[in-house]
Amino acid sequence: MLRDPVVAGMFYEKDAHALRSNLKKLLINKGKKLKAKGIIVPHAGYVYSGGVAGEVFSSVEIPDTIILMGPNHTGAGAAVSVMNEGVWRTPLGDAKINGPLADEIINNSDYASPDTAAHLQEHSLEVQLPFIQALKKSFTFVPIIFGTADLKALRETACAIRETMRDKDILLVSSTDMTHYESAEQAEKKDKMVLDAVKELDPGKMAGVVEKYGISMCGWMPTYVLLHACKLLGAKKAEIINYTNSGETSGDFNRVVGYGGAAII
Image (cartoon, rainbow, N blue to C red; front, side, top):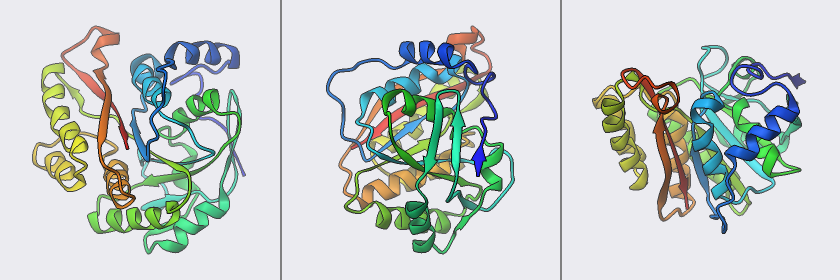
């Protein structure tokens, strides 16, 4: 099936020329690129979080295959939803799903299901594709949406992804925004606890501080899966690339959303 974009013209430019022009500003040449196993990127409108996302994508090597993971904002579809066939369209062209790789994840997992419904109106993965398309002429990807907070399901899915990624050149991506609608000071304080856990490569600690302090990080589930899978794949460290909040754009620091970016190496 063909999935048409649902947030083009809202979260990012609908016109291809305008989108390419904006991406050139957001994607910064940082010289030597990191060979990362996974990255964490935000998914708000580019005017707010595009700078962080662009810096992260600019910092790492982009292989031919990407696994994109994000949270379920719509409530539709399976608890662990893997879209395993089709093409996603953006203003920059079409990106093809890697069906065999998606099926391998599903077959390795007791929780992941082939599902389309969770993806049709979900923005958290769609907004990442133009960054990848601007950096990589040809690639395939697997989209996974998490609608469950069950740690057993998340750990098991991470193990399934690890088995699928073993001995393959694949980049794992977690799409998440951080604290929502608190003061910039409070958001930074809470988000630092999350990012400290990321730096320690400790998914359990990250999930714990999210629960204990009521941190409204929408994509903590895919981030938990990413950290767990990368550790199983032998990751040694995490590098925080950037952190900011929506107040830097809007000027309203009383009610912000936090945006963090990191590479797991």
